[in-house]
Length: 151
Image 1 (cartoon, helix red, strand yellow):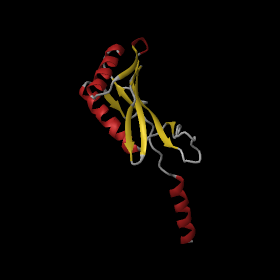
Image 2 (spheres, one colour):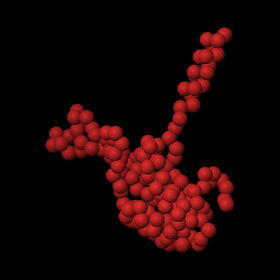
Image 3 (cartoon, one colour):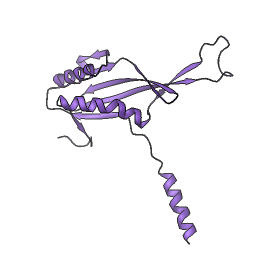
Image 4 (cartoon, one colour):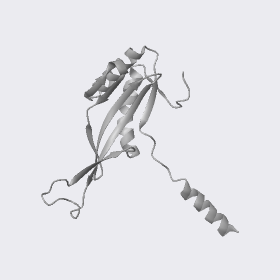
């Protein structure tokens, strides 16, 4: 009886494997859409990001790629910001994968393959998002923990 109960508990425990959170955060604002976009852009510039693509008429901008390493893995990420009902901040990431010699070309080219990554390790997400959250908060953009609510 106890053995079967323990096996059921273990099965349930393994079926709820934690998944990394999505690489997106939402912020509420009390400004016009144009002002919120400007505040978000200035905040990221203050943090050292450089703007690569900006579409003010679409209330959108994208930063230049930032390299980051985690253990032996190399990632490159960008921050995309869209201002609609709320400010949406998304991490767009790529992972660099080193091919094995048997798969690589003879000339040494194509040893590194770039792959789109929809989920970064949580520690990297925190190191990217926490400074952004702090800077946005200082400038009046409040993080929403529940995106179904509008303050």
